[in-house]
Amino acid sequence: MRTKSVTPKGLKFISKEDENMAWAPLEKRFEDLTKYTNGMNKDSQEFAEELFDLLTLRRNIIGDSIDKEQMKHFWGQISGQSFDSRLQTFFDMIDKDEDGRITQDDVRKIISLSASINKLSNIKNQADEYAASIMEELDPNDLGYIMIDDLEMLLLQAPKHDVSPESKNLSHMLSQQLKTTQSGNPIRRCFPKVLINGPYGGAAAQYYKKYEVVLLVGSGTPIINIVKDILNNIKAKDDEENALENGSTGKLQKKKSGRTNFKTTRAYFYWVTSEQGSFDMVKDIMNEAAEMDEYGVIEMHAYCTSVFEEDDARSAFITILQSLYHARNGIDVVSGTRVKSRFSEPNWRDVYKQITLNHIGSGIGVFYFGEPAPAKELKQLVHDFSQKTATKFDFHKQNF
Image 1 (cartoon, rainbow, N blue to C red):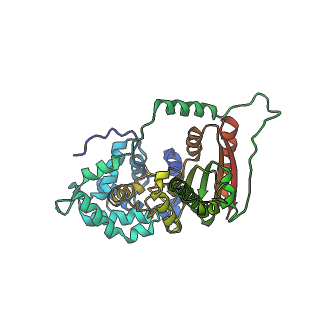
Image 2 (cartoon, rainbow, N blue to C red; image 1 turned 60 degrees about the vertical axis):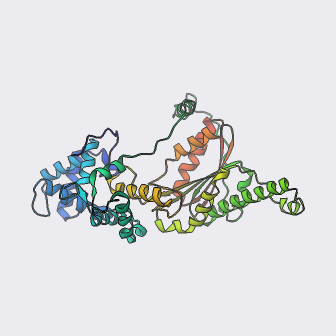
Image 3 (spheres, one colour; image 1 turned 45 degrees about the vertical axis):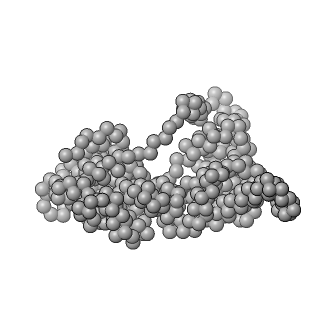
């Protein structure tokens, strides 16, 4: 018997844009769909079929169709705010015979299903390997099954971040400053200067050096070139310091030219992609940066936007697999690197806020490489934070 969970947030079986949807519009949608015998969108169809089978099984409904009244009951269960009932529904999908035991084949099936829904082809292709890894971790006595309670424990574990009272106060003050206000005098408003350079290629790998702090966002070769250049400059600077300590200055003078313009002491790197395969482009550079973490210069972030957000039932098992595999092997199953990936889109306001708190009064260079749409939000946040805080941001982009 599962114990009551005290966790405040629970799994969702529907997306954010649908969770506040009342029954009335859904009822109309149901009537529209039944006219044309359509179903749920194809991206979640396989998951929807599993969920449908479970809901009909629990209500002893025979057949592969339901009426409007039954649909209303279904909607009530998957859209309800009770964490405990949502969690129970998710585990019922895995433990269909309700014996509390999950076999390796059950694990393989749910990994394959979750990978398919979230467009993670690499994980789907390795479902057998990952299932075996989970069983080795959670079934050390080789019983041939693991208990559902063990999976629940893993799912409920969340990273804890210790935040100092001083940091909390700064964060609160910043939030107040950034609140949208109604201006009493709309005649004139001063905005900070925003630099926008682009498109550019290799030149960007030199231009960023004027900033002590940079935020690098996107995917593709240009952003990789900047990270490589930062790593090369870190190594060169380290070589110079070692040479000085050893009293070797002959070659140092030759190498020093070209390094004097390097000012960057901190870089925040966000690789944001909708395709798991694109991590192959950046795998080596991410691992190299992770190995050089002792310098504390580059902070790495990997986001895969094809994966449903982290409190969504459709990505819950990916989260479990990710945590187990990374703890055991030091490799992230989504990015294939040492950098643990996050799901869905980054909260860019929170990103800017944290950088502002970390570098009060500094000048920050923001470099974006990618599709035009995200650039609008990143640019607007440059305006907001530069205008309302002591930290000033400059925006640069290259669309492709």
